[in-house]
Image (cartoon, rainbow, N blue to C red; front, side, top):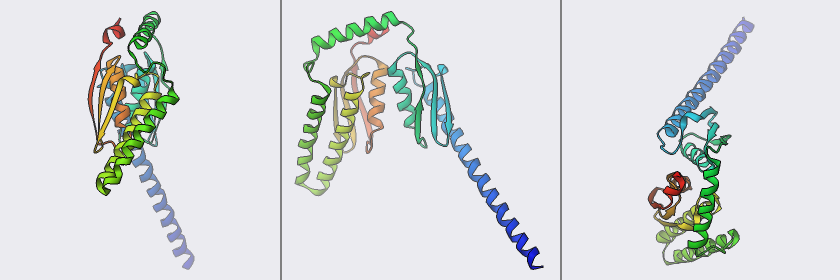
Length: 231
């Protein structure tokens, strides 16, 4: 009799474990399906991307992007858009860049280089000097925190946000980081300046939005070279 009771207890425990594992698996699958649908919708409604050439697959919160895009800006834009979705833990960006108009792209690059050489006053500043400049600005903002505890903590957070956003813009080869000003007040980021295209504009906004502690992003940037991009 004791053995029968013990067998029933063991069988019941195993059944409960199997059901719990099944429930967890179902919940994870349902969550992945939701993320997948959200990712597809996000890419579909973005006017700068051809979502029909982009495939999404989700595994335990990790989004895998495959397919093709026209340039590296669109590749990074797709990644930033998906990374901003709730529940996404990682993005594996396997998108292939396939230039549709190589000749036009080369012409555009030459035009951008000539315009940058003519208009950019920081033309001779290399990446290391830019980082040093950003660090100096951060130090100046950090010093203001000594005036008060509450205001000081807010200013320190804003300084950190400004540094992170500015650094990411400067380090991204597809964005004219020197032409974009970053201002932060109480976690609200304001971007001003000039960009080369709507896709680059959207990418800059998503980069700022994905930084830690950012509450909102105000986009005051202007597309100054849209004509060159469309040729």
